[in-house]
Length: 398
Image (spheres, helix red, strand yellow):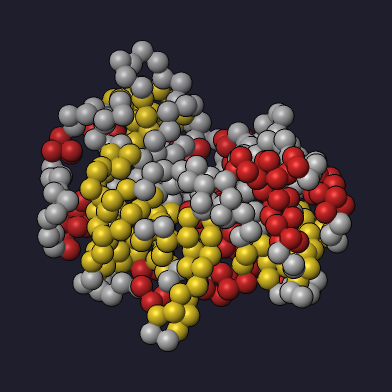
């Protein structure tokens, strides 16, 4: 009998996943990860981790499976939280949940699980894993969850073949209402518990307050850029079916860079590194005909650039670039060679509808040209590429 260690989080998804594994005949062990101790910036009413561990214990007791806890907070702080602070300080927007899965749940957690005799590890993610043989070699495929409203494959876009080999996703073929129904039928303590929100293992936070642990408050200018600014007229748009050369690709994929002279001062902020592209709340600038959005951040000069309306040209871009160093292929056999091109579906944030795009591999990295302009493309985010239901690769946007 194979031993599976499941990350019991105190939520309904991992609870039902543990039950499914038990029904499938595995020897199941529950392991709760304590990854964060500080409550700085946590919003009132958010469930602290000490509640989570109690719910996890109750589930393990109900399912009659062994239960253990492990403190991975040191590694989590170094690999995830420090990375977050570093990225925000540079004016980039990281996704800590993607990092948490790559660095914690499917790395140091696996080491802890092996100490308990694990043959496999499992989580309550809504995604699926299958195996395929190509030219005599087996590869693991990461597929979207059956419940398209809850598909969490994006969060696993940085996993490797070695990590997928050990992973099980027991509820990937079940939808959320059915998961709740199963939990209710089993009378699990987590059956009606709300889904966790916010930063992986930290919780729902007031981001500026959270970031102020390491990033200082610095008053600076909020500058508004008009829609008809001259710099927009200097960048030609590109037809989706065009065959651009490298220079044209670099031009269209490069983020806009602004100077104070391009716009007018409309307010003050408390630190450019506390904002992200596409953000509307927290600007505290009124009297505008249309909503004001962040379109760029200059952390060196401590300036937040904004523009009015969802259709502002600074908020919507046709293309992005991922350097070779930041490019990751879940399916190594599908790695693109320089000069190659593929048409795939891409998303640049969780729960975004998949977008049709052309991927063009060049010597310096990968260019992604979208059929429709994308709102809020932000450096530091992960772009994930899908071939049908399968997530084949991802990369950090430059």
